[in-house]
Image (cartoon, rainbow, N blue to C red; front, side, top):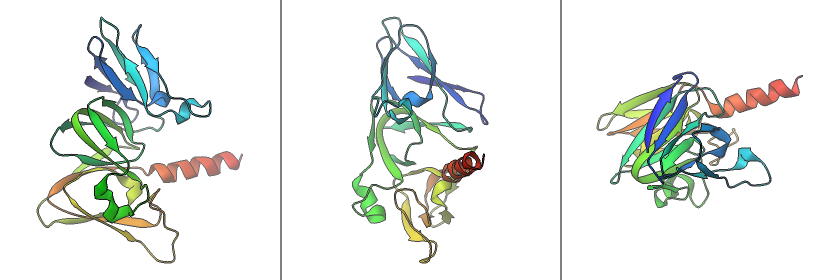
Amino acid sequence: MQVRTRHTPAFGVARLQLAPGETVHADYAALLATSYGILVEPKIRGGSRHRSRPTTLTAPAEGGWVDLAPSVPGDLYVLELDGMSGWCVSRNSGLAAAVTVRVEPQWPGFRALFGTEVGFLEHVSGAGPLVLASCGAVDLVTLEAGELITVEPGYLLAYSDFMQARLRAVSQSMHQSVRTGEGLMLDFAGPGQLLTQTRNPRALAEWLTSTSNGR
């Protein structure tokens, strides 16, 4: 799978160029268009295309392409996994991935952060490209050894899995949720890299809901 992007950073669209017979996983809700002959096998839940994740797309004998457009305006970032190190990514930020990429919502390394609960992160590993959709633009932050940074979970897109990470409450008086990151902060210690997004998708969803209810 080769990935080309356009309309970034505001309204990114990812084009996946597929070899003959190649299969990829993608988000059906983001499916914009395909070349003729692409086999689309969505996993629909409850009859809603917005709940299908992931969907399998397979190219015909002559190959083909798939265009994906995320539901929120923003940039796209392609992580090229090398088969050795993995990344921790914000849940539901994955737009498409090669079938050689593994996604683990309950990765053992998350136990120190979330205990036995499923948190707001997923672990990805394996080899091949993973396309991430951000809310807003993407910033790449590189931390040197011993360098520290604190990030609000809603603005986190991904971080390299060998970084030291600590989850803590903003205040004991605030509601906290490891599933959404609400009321929490993440402290990171380098060395390593992390990706942040310049808009908070949780806050955007709340604003859209309040706007809709106010009509």
